Amino acid sequence: MLPVPAIDFRRTPVTLLLAAVAAALELVCTFEPERREVYYMTWKLGLLSTIWSGELWRPFTTALLHGSVIHAAFNIYWLMTFGRALEPFFGSFRYLLVIVLLAFVSMVPSFLVSNWDAPLDGQQAIVGLSGVVYGLFGILWVGRRYRRDFDAVCGQDVVQMLVAWFFICIVLTYLKIMLVANVAHGLGCAVGVLYGLAMLAPARRWAWRALAVLVTLVLLFPSIAAPGHPLYAKYVKNERIRTLIQQMPAEADQLREDG
Image (tube, rainbow, N blue to C red):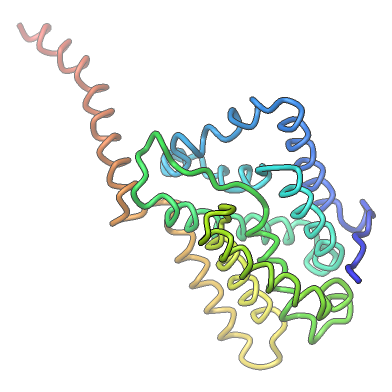
């Protein structure tokens, strides 16, 4: 039997607010389908270009968007279910920080992999809280051995179901039946497991913490730059062209003054 999410704003305010925002966005997109394209525009026309230009909030805000009602309902259910145990454990502020980190370390690398050869004006959109949900699942998967409240929301049946769904999604993507951000799922879960070990492992916790910090920094780096990636090379080239265009009028005015 699946666990039931708890609706208690005093204990899980961040969980409920994020769930409400994701639900509201999906309702708007469902009743006004053209809005979905508007909301996706940043991703399709250059998500990483905006991040590299300084708009560092994009992976987090775009994680709140979804591709369909079913997609949103699945992720909101698990967010509320897992948040029931994790937000009181972390405290609301640290829990929000964990969610933001999971959004970055799962979605940005997934976007890079999915858009290796994409033009700047035709990138594949990647949306949804799935990477975050699998990250929270990874924390609970490790922590359920040590905490009863974790096991209450992440029992063996939940573990089996989410592991099975992970591999089903890979098959569905391979068969081109449904495109799924499998890299985001995998990275989110792996980082979540590291975070769980860093906080709860009975032995060598310092080593797990060091590894968790290192892996997080490595996965965050593409938010700043991605040397060797074709998309980043195109972005740098476009920025140089844009800079030259901006400088040309000033150079022309200087030439007029000198003449």
